[in-house]
Length: 533
Image 1 (cartoon, helix red, strand yellow):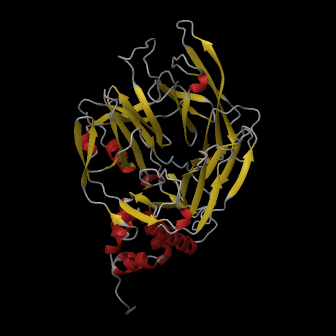
Image 2 (spheres, rainbow, N blue to C red; image 1 turned 135 degrees about the vertical axis):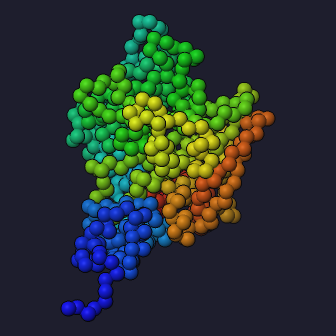
Image 3 (tube, rainbow, N blue to C red; image 1 turned 60 degrees about the horizontal axis):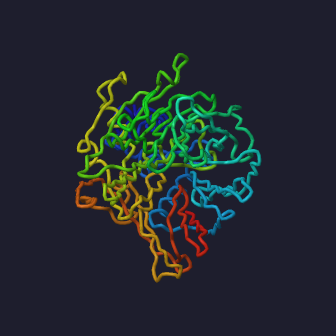
């Protein structure tokens, strides 16, 4: 007969390894509550590296990469260094990146890309000191295509290219109809992507009198899907199309006008779009009603794009504003990371469930005066509202007035400039809008700040700067003044840049591992100081 200590609970009769394996399957909230079961379970949770790492990831808004070459202890050490660096805005390395042939650099995830003087593309994969990400530079000639627009999805090694390849004259109107070709290539080799052998040809339904080369594009990728917003100008008609890029199947085309009608009385103005998940798309509408719409989509053997596989699930309305109207709702959010395209060279990455959606909201009136604010929305606001949608069969969308969904759960940051400055987001972090320094002489002091909207870190991690208080945001448009409460807090960290980084700072970019300071040179070119964490 054993005369040892009596077990605290029946769970103690199980092998320790089995208990740890079971605890590791719990979500973090349940895991933390399980510490209250008994002393032995509390000790296991508090002293098992794998379980502590799971809690630390949740606080950081991160997700583990099981394919990483590092072990658990190395993961934890790197996560601690990574979090401490961002909390203090203390970078480990600096690098200067100049414009490629005078063309500005775009940022896609952790890869910067710019057009070269010969019509190709120059790439730079950014380093990540804390996460052990190795940098790399390369170029693609791409002499066989005249690039009108491009986008990257680095986890899938995907380069999306758009080229204008002709136009035709519609028999019913004298307006020109633009035709475009989408190509899908490997961003590292320039060859056709191994997952598809198809190109996509598309003729827009947007009537216009200008040249097709005046068309603008906004390209987004999520897993097997690519979406393109075609726009004639900042305030012209827009069209959004979504394809499966691997099969070239067109799933849906959101047109500004109903079939056989080109009338502003029946038009819908689509401002912007983004993928929330690999099966949900977020679209902003500014006319006839300002709102955000979430659509579910799925492919099936009997579904065609004309029948509309997309089903609207959710409508989040913006408030009506006296004597003014919405001129833009620009969406910025990190794309969902495909489960089939995880980063194999990092120990952890941002969790898809902890992302922030940023909406740059622009309003105007007849006097051509306007205002701008930036609206930060946790991804959980959409998932929570979707769970409250009244019809599980997707025939009736859930519709929420502004007062029901925005004041308590989202954050507004005003911006005095107009036209709008579009936010840059990485996970839950954002460098806020600021007045660009147009003085080419070094200022006495230059600061950079980063806002972090991670709600778990706000509650459980005291590092990282001051926490905002509940406040109201005032928007003035001409003689109209509107007040909107904004209760979601955020953490604000400000750092004074050393003298060698002083200059005509134009704007700030951010990635998972870097802050990129973009300076304007006297000749109009840009230079980029990359601060790596």
